[in-house]
Length: 268
Ligand code: ADP
Ligand code: MG
Image (cartoon, rainbow, N blue to C red):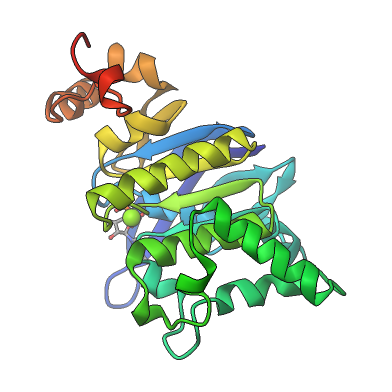
């Protein structure tokens, strides 16, 4: 579905843009339908840059990104619109995705344009269904301003928007870092549900223990380069690269998958 092919990104930095910063270097991986791939690396390793390039918000310096066979980097404005009906991003700071002077549910009405001629009742039913899927009470969020909602509610509203569009791929960049523990588990479980509906997810995180919980495959990024890539069990159970081993050894209880306490306590 999504294929990132030997992609690099060089930023021009310094006062006159005279210095080059290679943020991403020759990165190759893919995300399939119904697959959750975690992109894990320390702060500054290039994760968000990769996410932004996938979302067409930043250009690749080299390499190609294709979605269902189409090169994303060459999409024009009109094509991008169609692309965003399939691929959406949710970011670390959900507040940045909202305009504080508009009601939060505007993020939903803005995508109504994707359904030309839809009847009022049909639209309302779709919105309600999407809100139910992310376990948001319509009365608790509709008609509210962003500052009246919690970070978790705002993020779930963004996921609801993704559902309304019935997207195929979600790029989730550090979406749970700023949430409290119980909301975190809700959002992670939600991603698990969506996966079963066939959604592909690129789950970007700096926290190895979170990637372990939900992902099918893991990509370990270090200074813009992939040092390890493989099935979650393989990468965590039998890490090949010294860097991965180091990261794993610094995370307590990494081999314990989260889940119902009776299923994980004890023998693992
Ligand atoms: P991560 O998300 O893993 O923390 P980023 O992709 O945000 O990493 O950043 C990777 C590197 O690129 C960092 O050194 C960062 O300072 C640099 N960087 C990110 N965005 C820009 C930008 N717009 N201009 C210049 N440098 C940037
Ligand atoms: Mg980042």
